[in-house]
Image (cartoon, rainbow, N blue to C red; front, top):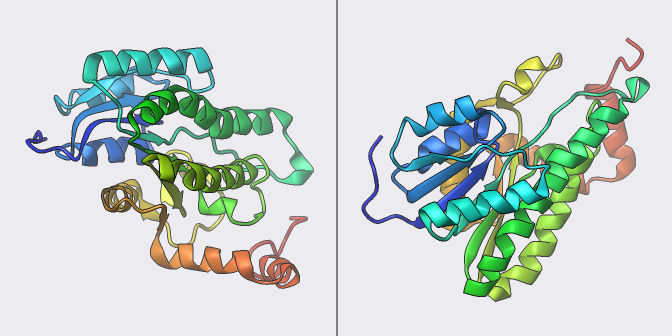
Amino acid sequence: MGEVDNPRWNTAWITGASSGIGLELARKMVGRTRHIAVSARSQDKLNALAEESQSIRSYPLDVTDADAVDETLTKIQADCGVVDLVVLNAAAWSAMEMKAFDLDAVRKGIEVNYLGVMNGLHAVLPSMLALGQGHIAIVASTAGYRGLPQSAAYGPTKAALINLAETMRIELAPLGIKVSLICPGFVDTPATQKNQFSMPGIISASEAARAIVSGLEKGQYDIAFPWLFARVMKLLRIIPIGLYFWLVRTFVWRNPTG
């Protein structure tokens, strides 16, 4: 992969980068960023990714460990200089019906999807605030727009991230810090390959990464894709609740006792 002469960012830090969207995003950032720091729990996969380009460096990390997140940022900035773009992408997905409630799955979703982002913010915000610049991208999901079947361990965490990003956008924009909210629909990743239900509009991880890069380069707040599926999901946010329940029961969740 080619390197970069005039990078848009000095250092981009991507969590959840060992597979799926994070992996493809790291690849597509080559040529746009001087340094790309990639984090995830799988050191072997990160090391393999780092071998693809001199721009990519591996920093294994469990985002649920707040101290480790702080220490990792310190290492990255010592090696690469200031992190001016962070993509908080690490996530845990588990399909769960309410009749098979799994508290461990719920806890994992909260720890990884929500608190993992909070740990990342705790690390990067001080330096960005001190400099009066930076770009924070939070990967939520269209599953956070409204409650969906089998999503009790996942959707609420993504809804929380959507709310969080709105708060951040309001407060941080006047301070020079950009915020982007990334809401993918169904993306073909190792996590979604386990799903036993239809996934309308599913796209490849490479297509998802392309959409993210385009949105980040434009400084967009709302980066949602694929376009048609995201539009439908956004429409479902504003229709009356009774109509929403009818639509889901009629077209999505027609056999809850099966």
